[in-house]
Image (tube, rainbow, N blue to C red):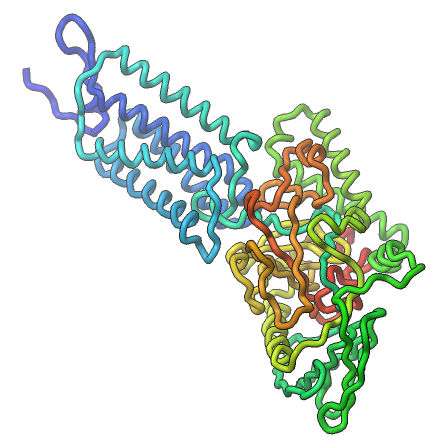
Amino acid sequence: MIRREPDNLVEGLVTTPLGDVEHKVASSRALAIVIAAASAGAGLLHLAYAPEHLATQTSQGMFFLVVAWFQIAASALIIFGRAPRWAMFTIVAVNVTVLIVWIVSRTAGIDGVVEQVVMPDALAGIFEVIVIGGATLLAMGWAGPMISETALGASVGVSLAGVVALVSVALVPALGGGHSEAAGHGNSATSAAKAHDDSMATDEHPHDESSTHSMATDEMATDEHPQGDTVEVAGANMTNTTHGHTGSTMNTTGGTTNTNHGHNAGTTATTPGHNGETTTTTTGGHHVAPPPGEDWATIRRTTLIGGASAAKQASVSAASRDFLEMNLRTRSSFLGNLGEADREARIDAFASWQIDRAIDVEHGDHAVGNRVDGPSTWVATSPDDSVTLMHQLHAAAANVTLYPTAQDAMNAGYFQVTSWIPGIGAHYLKASYVSTFDAAKPSILLYNGNKPSSVIVGVSHAVVSPEAPEGFAGTNDAWHIHPSLCLLGAFVVGSDATSEASCSSVGATKGTGFGSNSKLWMMHLWQVPNWWSQWGLFSSESTSISVERTDVGT
């Protein structure tokens, strides 16, 4: 009898009877089942994490969706015996590409960011290796020895059970270890996002200095001074009359000297400068505690409320709560699997704790993340450092005109990682800038609300490093760390002060977002016109970012 050649690869793997006693099939049929199961497993993992990536950046989410549906479709094509040779080679090529992206992101890094390997993306990679190897064999016509139908059935059962079990474990946060964020194979800045204090919980930074530098758009020429920390700057917008910025004096052209008055700091000395000007410098520690007898907690709270009426405070609180609850519902797969009553009770309890402590939640807890709050004194720097700092600030100021609104930031690849928080605003992160410090490329931009139209109020630098980065010239930009944020994917839903039990109650995890041994160093810079901080250029919080001035609730 003449045997008909198969029309496609997998059809040829389904030969049945061999002899009169037992039905057998080519072992390549069992291999096809294993490949189909692995492709489906990889596709399901990508599909499960696509919403998380869509929430951080549309292009990242779309990449996950395209890869997911391709792998699921490939699984169906193989299992139903409809894959011609060219289709098998296409399946191999796509999986090789995705695997290479994943390997690069975990070794050399993409845009300077090296991602950590966690269970979900590692498992997807293993599935893809199985698909690549098996599909290559089938595409080349491998048939293999004949096996019994019993063995074929066993391969089906083991493959399906194994994929279901492994994918299920990977999707349980407590077992799978979470997932990294970004483009490619589950890579990116995990959130780094993961960046800052959130859900209205005030994030307090360790270094405060009090100055109002307008560095927005003008060209700048610097002139070193022989004494103190005085810099002359040419430019129409360089009027820096500072109150609370002890030590560093900035002079506009025309012979005017701006003598600064700080916050109870160190030792003040007057020295001659250029052309008879007077330079006032102050030495001493960077941060100055509030005067004895003053209730700093009350002063801070009053400042960050900013004179808002009771109605305004209620409006901001309600809108902030709604925003937090929305993120809990849309980002937590754990909450989505609970009954409605249990889910809403957990959301209510978590949101109530966060919003009720919007300003006060971390005040005084300086042991966590080595932060301090309040005004600071400016420590005089060398003439060389002063010149370098002015150039750095000028480069940093370009971001004010580049990204005036949150929408502009998102168009450039930044994505929101915290709600609006009194004193520090809403944080938008660009993952590719987290690997190193570059004054001109802040990894975080700060906005006055949660809307695309919210305006820029400052910038923040975040760097993953074992030690504090060098940062800006001089010693006034001391960095701090966030060791135990409460994270839902790329979004910070609770501050370091959030308890482990409270965080896990909504399916979130505590940490930095960069692994247990990684440190995320951060600092703020307030140089946006009309949003300066009277507590300092690098202060932990800006006095301008108050409940009264935010667009939240409007």
